[in-house]
Length: 251
Image 1: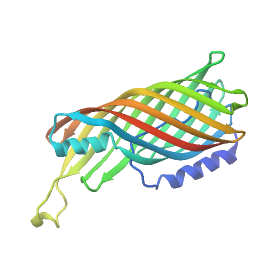
Image 2: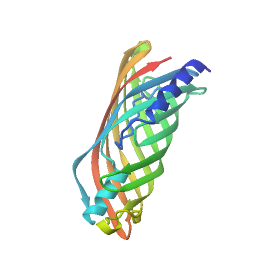
Image 3: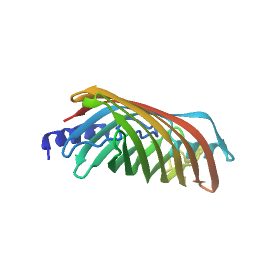
């Protein structure tokens, strides 16, 4: 294996873990084709997520906002990733997106002109504190992306479309409002528990030459969330778009 690129990937990912970012999107930004064995890509860019229309919900407004920010987390965030090709048309990747750290494994099937890839990702929702709403949340999840893509000779252009679904389990706490007499005491908290599922599609394009590429991707998905904020039950669903872009080096 190529120790130099792998050490560079770790060096790039490590400082990014301290970067600020809270957006909930986790784009793929890779084509359907996998890397040759022992080849590595390292990329950095941005991810974003925003609602298309209001969330459809029947809940207490404060509890709804807490679960919405915890489960959906709209906004802009960094995107940093490293991937490595394995034998037998497999590929492994590690991605940080401000809100989550994702480890995935995928396999590519050569269909002649197009390539089909099927992957499986496992994500850790990094502990997040929202000072305005006074909650802290973490969790874990998984996703299944299926991509179909083409690329030109010489790998100058690569495009892909796909479908992707997944889930997250959420666990945290919410600070209850306190009066001036209790301001010096530890805040009273209530539990925040819930889950989120999503399903949708994506389209992406990568352009480059030799070892440097630029990639863009647009994901669109329906999100469903349900949980409790203290004794209050909350559920909502909404559609969201998630654009992303990055520069990627291959070694």
